[in-house]
Image (cartoon, rainbow, N blue to C red; front, side):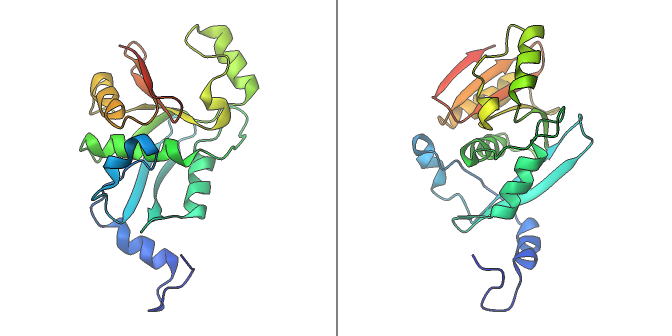
Length: 189
C-alpha cells in the first residue's frame, strides 16, 4: 500500500475511515487459515498497559497488507517496560490476539501484563516464580500475557485455543491468559 491512494486519500485518512467500521480479525498462521475466510479488510488491536499508563488503538492490517508503522507502534507498546527495550513483536502473535479477541465479541481493550521481555527481566521473574519459562517466547517477542475485565480466564483461553495457532496458558490464580505463536499447545486452568 502506498502513502497516497489513487483518489488522493492518505494512509492516515484511510486508517481514520476504517477505524469506525466493524472488524473481524484472524490469524494468518497456517493452522488457523479457516479464520481468514470472510475475515474482512482490516485488523485492529486495542490494548491498555497498567505498567506504563499507555493505550493503543491501531489498525495494523488493511486489505491483505500489514502496515509497518502500526506494527512498529505495537512493538513499542509491548516493550519491556522495566528497561524500555523494544523488540519486534511477531505478527503471528498479534493476529492470534486479535482473532481471539474477536471471538469473544467484546469491545473492551486487552490489558497487557507482559509482552517482550529482556533476558534480565525474564531471569528476575524466574527467580520470583516457578511459572516463568527459561526459554520463554516473551524473549523473542512471540508472546503476550493478557487480561480482560469482562471475560474470565476460561473464556479467554477457550477463544485463544479455538484459533488453533499457538500456545495458550491459562493462569486463573493470577487472572491472565498467555498467548504465543509457538507450537500449538495449552496448559493451566
